[in-house]
Image (tube, rainbow, N blue to C red):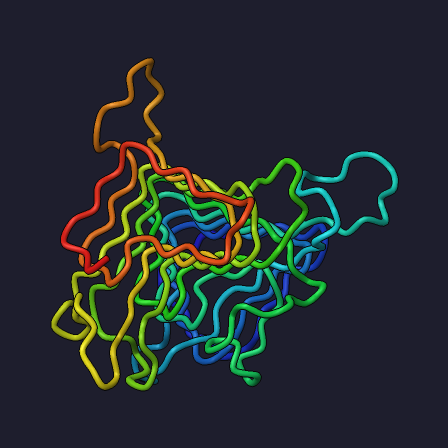
Length: 274
């Protein structure tokens, strides 16, 4: 699908198992609705998903649903009854912005304060695959990407040269940015040469201010394992070619982890509170 002119919609969209949609040079302006990938695949090429400017509000986000007990690779042999994991591929030049959840690998429920309580038992719909590639961006979302538990073998979700940004106040003044990437009991997720940057420090200060501190996380992790490293393929990895974390309350905050650990290599932390 090639769309060179912006399109407005307030209608939920669903991509069922086996469906595949490629958006090229598109701008879709959304109002309060959710895009659901229920076994389908959505590929964004140089495409923007954002809220409708006139509404001055946020849209829900993209649900990348799946099955937490099924492998993440595409099912090519019996039993075909296993649900195919939904896939969201955000390619070069694409931006997902102004959402409560830019992309989440489960079926979230904003009416049940999901945006306030992430660390809970996920629905059976978790397990979808989210891939961010070079020069793709998740911007000005309450949570950029959010992961609930999934099948731990052959994990497919990953981010390479992806930008996670806060560069302006969120469209809903009552909602504050929380985490650019939020991981809840997930395993071996990788971030390679990604940027985590808060440049709206006048609105969201680096240092928490009482009595209502605003806490902006680069990565917020609960009982999860993940790696932060460089996308450079060389015998010697250049220093600083990994991820960068800048102007954040917490560059990385990982807690309640006993066995699962974080691996951080060749990365930079600039002007963060912690």
